[in-house]
Image 1 (cartoon, rainbow, N blue to C red):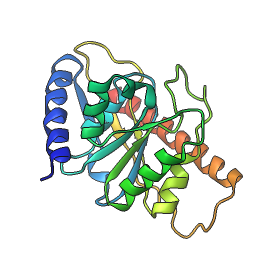
Image 2: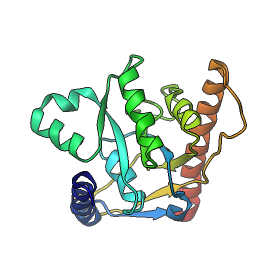
Image 3: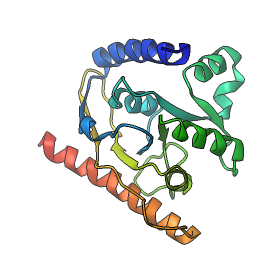
Image 4: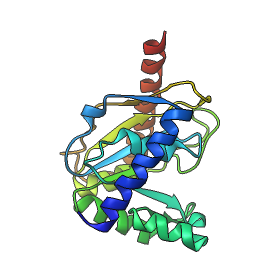
Length: 203
């Protein structure tokens, strides 16, 4: 096992223990996450969402995340993030270096974690999703895996993280900008629908 994977698993376990005690969670649909490359996509409402995304993906898979480049300015944190496979993205621009790294992650057979909205939101539909996740999935021949993470997180109260069925883009051919945007919107609709499923489970 290489150093990055070992460090990732150790830190994942430590954070799982912490969050499991203070902000407990239950993952539904974990078995739907396929082997091999996949783009895991979730809604983003809280700074803890990347942790819950990592908890939901089985430990045997290495989840690599895009993170805003500002986090890497503090060198110790930047080193740690890079050491576990997280890489920076310049939000608000067409960051080709980040896209290239993301594509390399997928082509190596790993899982890539992305929040399509690109930033934390306070309500559904507040921000239009970016098309990067769909574009990367198609280029890499990898499925999109929708995931819902609840907005409300209360101390000692369990939340429900829900994984949906993978979405294949095979056979669609070259997609236009409008088609990419349409699929991105549909992806966020599927993620929101998973949230309604979680509400029914809780009822």
